Amino acid sequence: MEKLKINSNLSNITIIEGFVEEISEKYNLDQTHFGNILVSLTEAFRNAVVHGNNNDPEKKVTLTFDPVQRGLSFTISDEGSGFNPDAIPSPVETNEEKGRGIYLIRTLTDEVNFIDKGKTIEMIFDIEGIGKKVMDERKKHFNIYFNKIKHKA
Image (cartoon, rainbow, N blue to C red; front, side, top):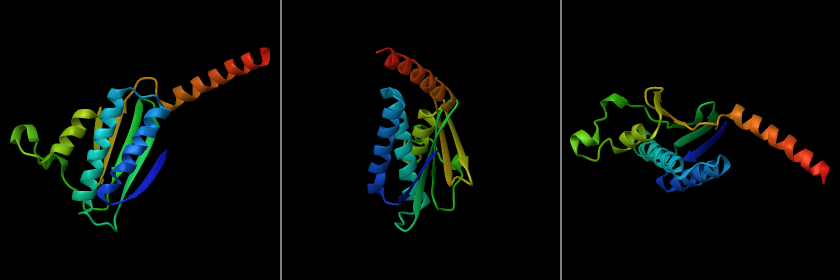
């Protein structure tokens, strides 16, 4: 599990972007997964800064990343008072900008959970074959194979 504490400032969205690029390279994600994760995390970060922390630069946004058996799990937490996600209108129905971030997150992720009265949003992306156990097992087999080749040479 990795955790980043980020100052509550919209200019720090570049930290999120860089983090997603690192994860994408590390797990060899395709462009679809990369795009879905990037948009979801940047929208969640933006909402945490603007709506959760009320643009207060003294507050923090916490990003947590955890590879799970079914794929990748990310959480974004703010220091605000929370909100009711069911009360956020769909921009498709209202034809307004309000609720756009939550709508995009719900659309682009495979599972979304609002925790601690909405102060934390968990986003899970199902990516076959990316679970930590599977990755560790593959790595072990590659190491065995390459060590045998190295010793033959």
